[in-house]
Image (cartoon, rainbow, N blue to C red; front, side, top):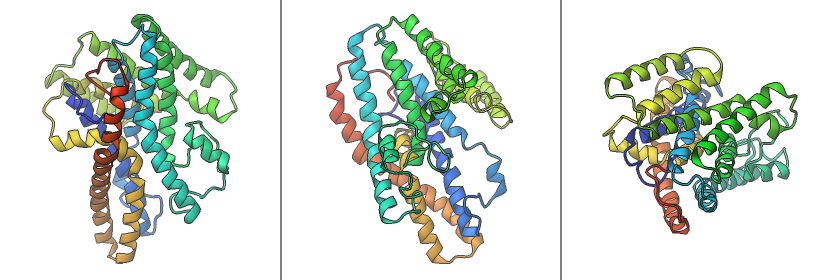
Length: 352
């Protein structure tokens, strides 16, 4: 999830964004492919289940923590920086999310069950989805109508914390951000919370934003993992932990933080990977639409399963990437160019 321009000096972050989006999309595409083999919601290849593709979300959260602090480094201690920060965040997140959420509502009304469970949770649920407020559905899940939007409900919480901290001098602000995130995670473990927002926003996964804050602070102090030696070693360690078992924040968040730290030293990545990094937010949000459309196409082709599944996996990932890039170039970039003159904070080296 990124800005319309490549991350200057940090190609590795863009590369990780691309890989995170690809991982999440492939996880869902693989599960969708199971329906072609009579196993709806299951991957047709057991080996895929052994790869922690869901960790793409954890990587996104750490990257977000890094980017928000790196980009706002010169804005701390200035109350006037709050409005431009909030404007950029809303412009970055809201239009595309609302557009695709509205599309999901239309599909739910016209053909319940294709993209969602219809509107059985009521219009209050729809309103909360557009407002980034966690809502417990009738089936017990806390997800918005565009289900992938649950991550954005965490993102908005983190943005609010950073926005409030911008009035403080940088050292105090950074400590306040970490303290606020830590307090939320601690409250979730210590208090008998019941409401959906309280339970949701105090999940330990919020600590992954703090990991990104720490990486950004270290990077601003000049810390880098030497490339290729140390960076490769730390990346290998991160991957080893990533494939291990354990608490999500430890088994996914810490390796993600190590990978982000290593990525600061990566240079000259392929142009296509950088482009996918630029389009990672669009890729993340839009891929369920072409994914399900492609499944309908393949269901009508009546191909042998041994051919249909690999063909579906490859072609659907390509189509999802192309749709995401088109959405990024035709919707995201124009919107961000339009909104950029309305901010008066100096452009950072990295944007979210």
